[in-house]
Image (cartoon, rainbow, N blue to C red; front, top):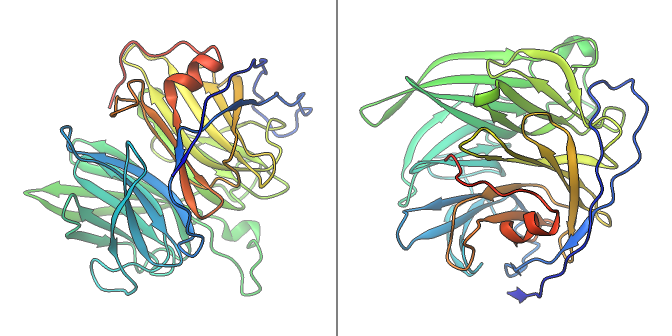
Length: 355
């Protein structure tokens, strides 16, 4: 592990833009925040996305998808020590083929496998297969976000399929960029109830190059990042998957919008984090949860070219104010003290957070 000391700085304010045809805003200055640690680096794994699972007592795991080695890497979420791995190359239950997005809910890990064209659910902490979905419906899936509903789970998955010559499809064929799966959970069994394909095929809501997404059920919002060089922004959908007609961060992004995270305070306040991915100038934008105003931005000392992120806003050993995790250039994961990030950027912390 790389153990690093902290540093601080000042941040300025910037107002968000809701339409892609608005003038570009003055870029917000990013403040440096030093990582508490980085995991041991292994570029052969090609790490993409991360999620935290904890038993609430003494096991705190940081799970990372490794696209080249087809595994889930298990780290200690408090120290970054590598504890083991799960999965392995294949298409049988429990095996993986280029795992990309991952999300943990309760004692389940939900994993999108790009090259198996599916969503797989594993139990935690034993990694036993619980279900496989979408193998006949997904083409090139990348990211996912899951909302717990009364009957089970609503799952949104981005699908960045291409033409035969690896180009963005014509507008009329962009209607499957976003998938919604409604999955029933009863007596420990998961079953598919319904599937919908979503996404506008005209106007500013077209999804051209998609991966990251995250939702806020309390405010009826689903944020879907568009990484296409001509449409660097975030499209705003509702929690049913309908496009609202709004885009966010037009002019505020220098590079590609990647990993997204949300802090949900009990009083309804909180912060969005949206990654502006770059090899040299990697930034994390902080948005006010309700207004979606850009409040500040920070960057790590070491962390660059970030794909997936995960915010664990609750205490972990050594992190009483929570941890923000960010993938560093495909090879390892950085941990930021979330309380330190908030203090450095003069952000008001939550008095209590929602799960």
